[in-house]
Length: 173
Image (cartoon, rainbow, N blue to C red; front, side, top):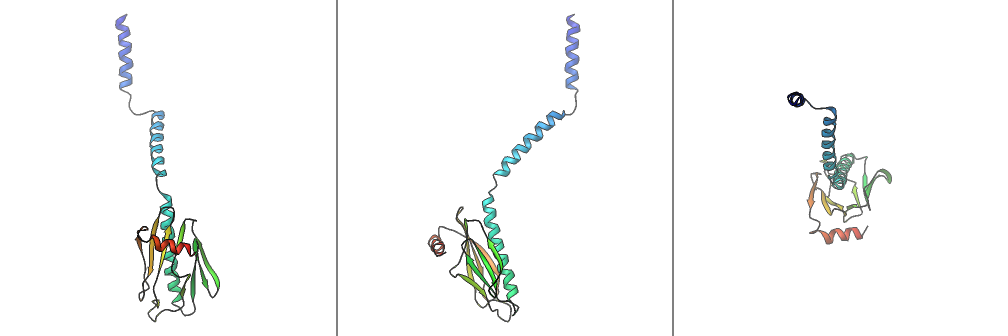
C-alpha cells in the first residue's frame, strides 16, 4: 500500500516538474508588476522643467520668425513683453499672443522689442537680451539676438548670480 502511495506522489511530482511554459495568471502577474514599476518611474519625470524648456523654445522660435518677416520692408513688428508672456503686433494689430504658466516670466530691460529696420544684409540694427525665468524651479535662460548676424542663441544662466537683476526686472512688471 505504501508503495502505491509513493508511486502516486512520484507521478504528481514528475507531472509538475515536466510542465513547460507559464500559465496565463503567472504572465498577467509578471506584466502587471513590470507596468507598475514603469508607471512609478514615469511619475518621477519633472514636467515643470518641460514647461520651462517649451517657453524658451517658443520664445526663440518667435524671435527668429519675426526677424525673418521683418526683413521684408512691408512687415514691421514689435514684441510687447507682458507679465507671463508676450504679444506680437504688426502696425498696432495683435498678430500673436503667448501666455505661459504663472511661474514663468519673460524679462528684459525694455518693455518692447521693435523689428522696425534691418540692415541691407537682413540683420537687425541692434541686438538685445531677454531672460526667461522659472520662479518655481529657479531656472534661468538668457536669449540673445546677436547684432549684425541676427542669430538667436540662448545660454543657461545661474539664477543666484543674476538674482538682483532678475528680481529687479520682475518688480518692474
